[in-house]
Image 1 (cartoon, rainbow, N blue to C red):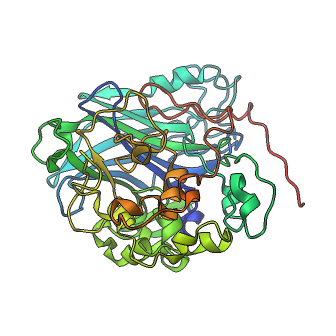
Image 2: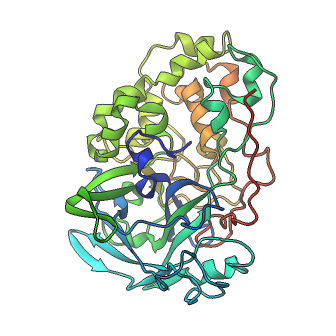
Image 3: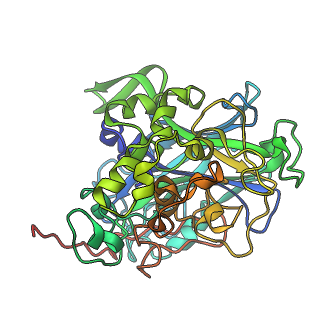
Length: 462
C-alpha cells in the first residue's frame, strides 16, 4: 500500500496516519495546482456509531519546498474542531442529514487553514465545514450534494476536507503473502495459477485534505509558472505531515486525551511506497519523525533496495539481469531523492538540487496530458509520476517496474532490463469495474462508500 499502516507506531494511531499525497496541475486550468493529502486508512464505511473523523489534537500539514534546501518554504496547516449537538444520544445523526448545517448531524466538524510563508502565518480561510461521513441512503440521502456544499472557494483558493473513497489501488493480500503478484504467481517460488489482481482498498474510505492554489503561491518569486519546463523555478517539492503534542495524557474528568508540549511530527509522506517498501522495519518510525532534508541517511536503501534482491529469489530465472546488477541504483536515487536532472528524459527535468530528500517533485510548467497514461513518465506521459502524482497514476505498477530495472537504462545505457520488468504489475487497476470512480472536478477524489451500501467480504482459512 502507499502508506497505509506502514510503520509499527503510526499503525496504532490511524487519525494521524497519512496514506497518500498527490500533487498535480489542474487538468483544465494551467496555472492552478492541486495538492491532496489523505489520512485515516482503511475505513470501513459501516463503522458506526463512531464514524471516522479528523482528530482535534492532530496538526495536519501540507508542505512545499521551492528552493534547493528541501525545507518547507510554504506550509498549509489544518486544525479541526469537533462539536456534540445533543449530548444525550449515542447516535451520529438523529434524522436525515440533508444540509451541511443540519441539526440532525450530532457530531459536526469544522476546520481552519493557516498558511505560513517566509515565516509569516496567516489564517486564509476562517472557519470551514467538514461534511458528515456517508452513513447510508436514509441518513445521507444526497451525499454528493453534501460534499459539494463542503467544497469552498476563499480568496481565490479552493478547499475541501472530509471523507472520500480511496483512490489508491493495490493487491495487499497478494503482495504481503511472500511477495506474490497474482498475474505472475504461476512463476513464483511457491506457484499458484495466474489470475487478476484484487484491489484490497476498493471498499475502504479515507479522509482527504485538498487545496487548489495558483502556482504563483508556490514559486519562490511569487509569479506563476512560466511554461519553460527546463527552468528550475517551476519545480516544487511536496509532502504532507501529521503532528501531535509531545506528551499525550488521558484526562479522566473529561474522558478524553489532552496534549502538552510542542508539536512533534509522527507521520509524513512524499513519494508513495517510500517508507512502505524501502525503509527497514526498525527505522520506519524514526523516518516518520524525520525531515526530508535529512534523508541522506536513507539513501542506501534506495540505491540497493531489498526488493531488488527478493524479486530474483521469489521468481526464479525470471530476473537474471537484475540479479547480476550490483551497481548503486542511480535511477531510483534520481526519481525519489533528487528529482530527474536535465538530459535524462528528453525535454524534462524536476531536479531540486543535490540534497537527498523524499518529496513529490512537480514541474508546474509541464502541461496536463490530454490523455493520461497510468504509467506516467514510464508511459511517455511527462505530466504523471514521478512528475508529481496524479490520482490515476498506477503507482504500484510504476514502482514495481522501476525496482525491477526498467528505469536503469536512463542512467546506465549498458544495462538491458529483463523482459519481465516492463510487464510487472499487481493487476488491480484494470481488473475491477467496481473500483471508486475519480471525479472530473475539485477535489477529484472519489465519493466515499456508504455504510448501508457496503457488502462485507468473505473469509476463508484455506
